[in-house]
Length: 173
Image (cartoon, rainbow, N blue to C red):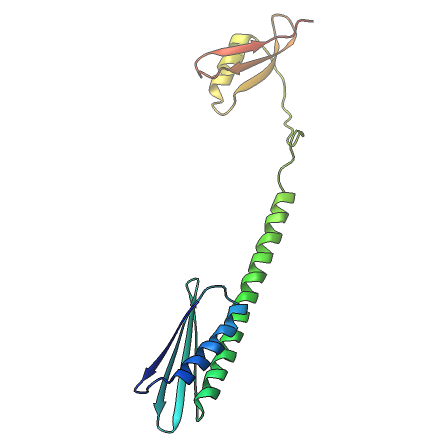
């Protein structure tokens, strides 16, 4: 925590400095380590106190004018506390919503080891050579099921990983 008390056209007494620092320390219940600046000045018969707090890239600011400088500092601290509470509440709510969304996404993940898609198509009788030509025509497919004309059994022809050659699955029985 780093707190500076600065006076513009006004000398900052030890009593004012101590009072401003003591009041700014109240913000430590909301913020861990922050930089704070209290600037005081006099305009006419009004004493103006401006308080700024920088924390994790966010700057909180309060400016008040009062006949009593101490009252002005007190009011600034109240304003800063309200701003900080509002921001913390908002962040906590967003984090909670993000956590809820993340847990819902986990619950909605795709099932594993289950049949999730079924396709139905007609199996036509053809020779393994005709099946290879048909598989070459359909670039998106990696296999084709057909009834082998030579033996009357259901066969599967598939592309090998080299994408040049083919494999044939034929039942024994």
